[in-house]
Image (cartoon, rainbow, N blue to C red):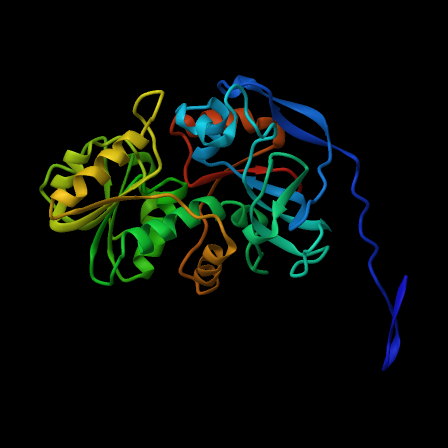
Length: 349
């Protein structure tokens, strides 16, 4: 096929690569640990209204994947993710890839566009994604880097700016600074002009320093909540430290932002800690709050701007193949991940 131009010879138009009807994908038919996952041959999904179909290059591995795999805490099942088994059979949300088909009503993306954001069942060769949860990938950003931004970056940005209301000159303590969310928080807080202290294990301290933290604490030897230092803002991505201890490390009018819901019991998990903090907040001078990330491209655009300005460099950890997804999730759950791990479905990005 060719297209004519008014001033010059006709130029060939690339023919789109046909989309196969079957694909390799990670699947899960029951709640459980990583042994519940398997690789199977599945029908390739099709893009619905307001969606695109992506050829997945790379997918990110975040804590939410573990929660949806295990069905824990049970509260997540009541939120529409499936009572007895996962409602979404193919796991994975973070994604970076290329648009290969568009659904009805999509006008702002086209076949061939390289994008990143949040998809549906991204641990597969192809995945659907709502167009309002995607942005175009900057040319200087690799697919590996792009795949770790959306889920963690949105949470970090909203936790720091919307919930935390960070200001230049403030002292900020980041618990879990070497993880997916924490690695974004450290960089974004520094870009906002804050004095940043990152907390991580000694083995990951070099990463936190490289991210730009002014000070790094090893939680295996130092208790950052012993009250010897007080901070204007604490972003807790670790999810296990009691609120009463976190308050000891806050200034009298400081802000605590609890991110995620780790630890706790099987029914509410770490969300119980968030609820207790919110209930206590009106009765103390400190502001105790949490963040539930809003997934929309409007939130991704400030992250793209920060990347293009050199203020944010996605911290890519270990890269795994598609059939290594179970091991990737085990490593994350056991605390072995540095930065954010990726599943490399196709060639290196």
